[in-house]
Image (cartoon, rainbow, N blue to C red; front, side, top):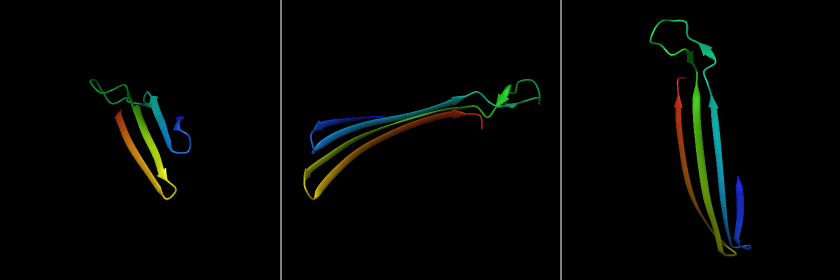
Amino acid sequence: MVNLTLVDGELGFRLAGDWVRHDGWTRNIYGPGAPAHLDSRDLWSVRASLGWQPGEDTAIDLIAVHAAEADSR
């Protein structure tokens, strides 16, 4: 996560991300053609936020989020 002040007390930017990756922990002994391990996971996400406070009683936040996952759970 990174926070940046663009205009002191008025405008800020934040970027945060997460990544989880592991091979499967469950061994598949079933048969041919089946994956060797199950329960694998490859997940990542990112979030960007822009916060603007133009006045004492007004705050505007713009937020963008994206995530993707591939797994065998």
